[in-house]
Image (cartoon, rainbow, N blue to C red; front, side, top):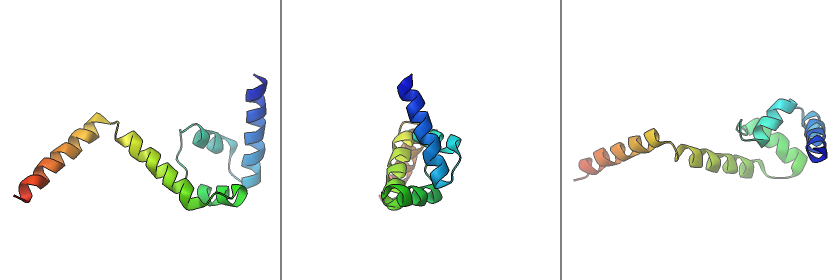
Length: 88
């Protein structure tokens, strides 16, 4: 419980320092919201992690999530079948 309180306190201070609402930072840290380009630049300024790395990590995560969606995977399979027929 003490750890959670310290974590929350740190997140609140950090969110104030970089100028984004605490809820947004918390949602990003808990994978409920993506890192936007603006947020990536703010984090780069605060943490020294290049914004393009943060955006790349976000993109990788997005790809992992979408690849778990059965309906999207079926759609991809159908497109691949149609594309294969075009090249025959």
